[in-house]
Image (cartoon, rainbow, N blue to C red; front, side, top):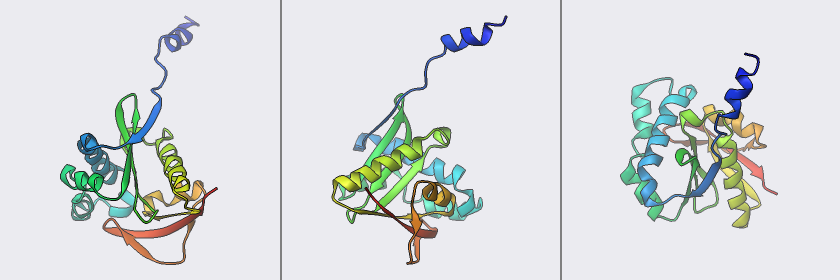
Length: 170
């Protein structure tokens, strides 16, 4: 009986690797699900469970809207764990991070950190020495942990007050 745990671990599949790839129009339904679930389930500090605020925030996260984003000038990525959609990230044409949302089932697994690192690397590849984004209250500590600092200007985003942030990229 002492080997029970060792045997079960030997037959347990390792966690699926994380893959981050450019999003396509074929991903719009998965992206919409991630955005809406993340806002609804993980952003309580911002919307306080207020259904009207949630509806306002998620109203522009439909597959049709996202299809327009992908066809537009911004760039978007999808993170997957073993083929399952886990996070969405995006960059605006001006070189700021426009989106970073993690599916509730993928929260706490390093998915958000991996997507943030990917977005920062993309900004560097585009020649940006500084990253910019607007953080929700929910995400503020996450960004601080990854070296982002509050900027001087005030901001608002995604139907909730946001904190403009900056980070020197290297």
